[in-house]
Image 1 (cartoon, rainbow, N blue to C red):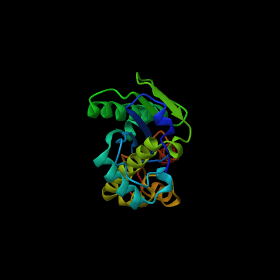
Image 2 (spheres, helix red, strand yellow; image 1 turned 90 degrees about the vertical axis):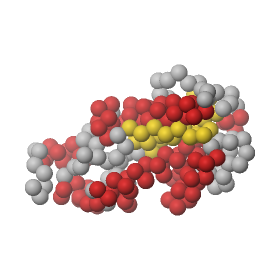
Image 3 (cartoon, rainbow, N blue to C red; image 1 turned 30 degrees about the horizontal axis):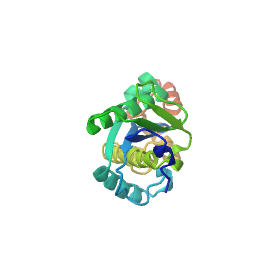
Length: 209
């Protein structure tokens, strides 16, 4: 389990921030901000990529109960307008803003996974590979990933042809084949190359129409 070395160097309360969904062709980008409790943090917190889905779901439920959490979601249309970098920065900002509202105060410091920080007024540090070394960031990675996966599984009910229940919007071979057969849905990111190129090829014609 990642430690608290970085948290202990900062003015409390310390928030960890991470995102999920930069790379998919469909669906939102989601960020989570988390302040862990001084005691009672659940065991097993780790980088979300190292955990199976069932364990992420269990830990997300536990963290939601014991920690202070803020979540930011930016939808595909806004991703296309802003580009994925700035959409991610906005999702992180929304997450910390909502965390601050839940805390009733501004975090003393924010630890962000990655090498870039949003343009905000919070005291913050970027940590490359932060989800592997900071427990707060790892907790945020779990909540962001589970929240986004849940959104995509629900979206798959309306758009079953793309296989989002399993690929979560990423560009798997089956997803790309479904895009070629059915064309993009309203939840696809038109600015992402595979979707944009397909729309150029189709010339506005929806397959099967």
